[in-house]
Length: 167
Ligand code: PNS
Image 1: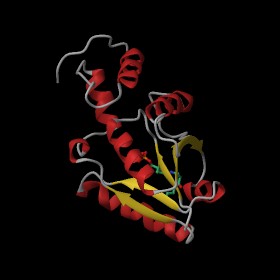
Image 2 (image 1 turned 90 degrees about the vertical axis):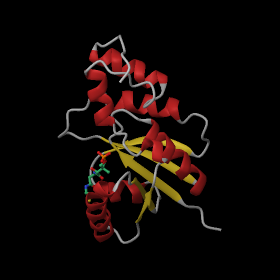
Image 3 (image 1 turned 180 degrees about the vertical axis):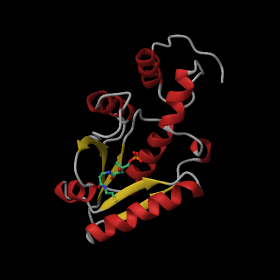
Image 4 (image 1 turned 120 degrees about the horizontal axis):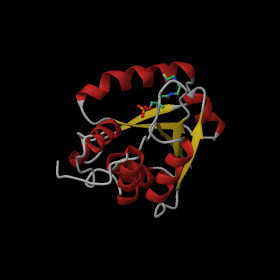
């Protein structure tokens, strides 16, 4: 029986219910799942990597085979370093596919030991993204249905928006 370790990489700025749905599905499919946050020096994130790790850890505490890490450099190098053989990426809509296909084929070119597996989140989250969550919160909208309560609290605190109106 194979022991398959998978890496679910991303920015997770912040983690949403869509990410959590994919983590749960991946945890049911693979022996071990490592959620890997990219330390991206180009983007200006809302949360530090440490804050994102904290929010992810509190969101996945019920899943025994999932851990959270951060990485820099090439994703395939990180995947090989942690002894994983699978990269998980979520596809929400056809619009995600072209970029994801390009990345998956490039990663395969960079390492033929690593396979990318595309997974679909629940339809209820097919429109959800960290970017929209931040935009809604910034404009005073209610993000409670999109991220866990602890994350919603932190987003509002970061943006200095204590109140919430229905979106
Ligand atoms: O959640 P995101 O921001 O869409 O995740 C993108 C991520 C982190 C998966 C991608 O930017 C990545 O893998 N970066 C690491 C650098 C790398 O390996 N680049 C070559 C990819 S083909």
